Length: 295
Image (tube, rainbow, N blue to C red; front, side):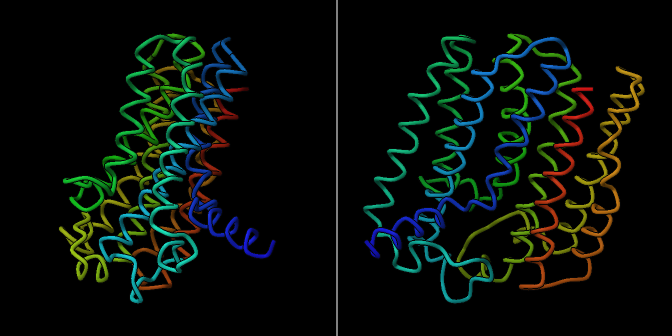
C-alpha cells in the first residue's frame, strides 16, 4: 500500500501540478469571451479544459523523460526534483504514461471535433505532436530555442482561440488580441525558468533562447512580454468595447513591476521566487481579464 501511495505521489510530481493553471487560463479567457458575446457551451468548455490539461500533463511527462535521457536533469539542476531523476518512475513506465495520456486526450477531443469540425481535429493532433516534440524527436523544440515560441502559440493563440471557437464556431479580432497577453504571461514563466537554468542548460547542450542570446536579451524579452500584456486591454478598450471592466487586468501591474525588478536583480535559485510570482501574475491577470469579458 505504501509503495502505491509513493508511486501515485511520483506521478503527481511528474505532472507538475503547480504549472497546470497555465492550461486553465487560456480556456477561461476564451470561454469568457464567448459568453460575453452570448455564446456558451458548458460541455464543450469542459472538454476543452480537460484536453488542455491532459496535453500539458502529457508534455510534462515527455519533458521529464527526455530531459532525463539527455542528461539535463542532474545534480546541478536548480529547479524541483523530477520523477525519473529521483528513480520513482522508470523509463518504461513513463513511456506508457505518455501514451495513455495523449491517447486519452485524442479520444476525449473527438467530442470537440463533432461540435466544431475537422479544423479542431487538425489543431488537436498538431497540439499533441507539438507536446511530444517539445523535448523529443530529432529536433526537440525546447533544445533548439523554440520552446518560447511553442508556449506562446499553444498556450496563447491555440488555447484561447480554440476554446472560443468550439463554442462560437467563429473568430474575431478581440479574442485574437485577448490571446496575446495570455500567451505572453505564460511564456514569461518559461523565460524565468530558462533564465535561471542558463548555466546548467549550456553545460548539457540545451540551447534555449536564454542560452543563445544571454541574460540581457532574456531580461528584455521578459519585460517586452509584460509591456504588451498591459497594452492589449487598452487597445481593446479604445478600439473595440469602450467598457472600463476590460481594463481590470491593469490592476495587476504592481505584481508585474515587481517581477521585472526581480528578474533584473536575482540569480540562481532565488529566481524560483520570480517563477512563482510570474505564475501567480498569469493566473490573476487571466481571471481579471475573464471577468472583464463576462461583465
